[in-house]
Image 1 (cartoon, helix red, strand yellow):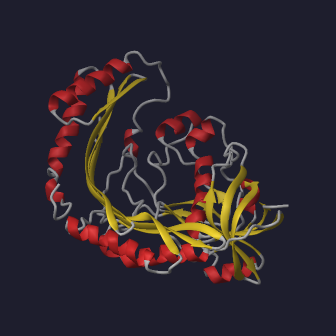
Image 2: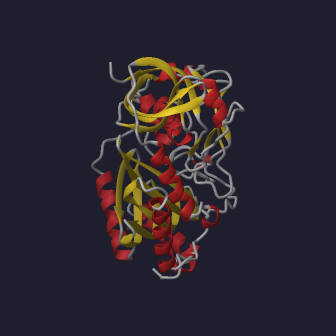
Image 3: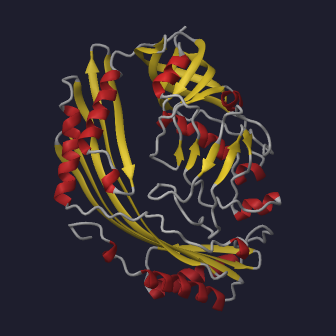
Length: 451
């Protein structure tokens, strides 16, 4: 990788990539495959980590990968390689074909239907190489951590600051004649530090991520935010076990929506492993609740013209008036359920929760007395039953204002009750992901602390 920047000029042109996929598909057909699909990814990156005012690691990454799936009738075989030489690709195709001949027949396997392939391809402005030298990236990582360490004398240690640059190209093609190339970038800055006081030690973090480096927060701002959050958590207290409202900050609230998308995913539905089984056209949330996908937003992290099967994606309501409008299906799950793919073979695309018009401060006023959650720990979520129990940290709120930091509590409920109990959604939308939401206020949960 060149030391000045990650530049698309370092990649072969789009036609070269298309030719690799086209040749791979032809090989599969020559060997008798009735259908085939192949995907190719090439990425380059630079990652710099600083810790305690010194450079800890500098990593240059360059990754290649090609995967091929072949179908002999309803028998499927898949193989992959990181070697893009013609002979290596030939052996990979051969391996996939050999595997297919020995796999069990599956009536639901095969490419997505040909008439569902995307036909139009908007420029979504997803490629923005960061024109910066390695030395300048190092300076940014040090600046980020130094800002955090210098913020307050109570910041005594660091888990490090990192700056990451990544540029990649991906190609997908299948024997329906679909063949497309995408160039994308993804850059981030992050920092995590440790603070100490008589009440013990606390850690916290902050980060920013964008396809366009010009839209990233400054390294200094990220470091200062990480330090400020850490200092705010010092002298944390425990709570007595009680029932109270809970307000999730946006970066934590995102996980609540993630549990929902998992529960209405195709695999969970056809395996009958979901607390939202057969829930389409059912009201699960309050009437004001609305979830919408916006796949064609410029520069957004979840934007795409098609999913990983080539199926066209669409702007659509996933939840409207609190009622589930659709499952999230790829072609295999759709066939299992007797439905049609929804274009979600690669997940959701800029899934956005509409707010109720209140700011974060107004959501705290609406909370009045309860727990503001800023961190979750553990994995106590069962999407089969909906049972929810996770370790949490944050702040205790009285009269709509922060009183003191809180640690070592567990929040518990059932996701069905939590979803019905949503009373406010803040307009403090967090754009740093494929699921975007503001703060979410839930009317009542069990907060387990010390008795």
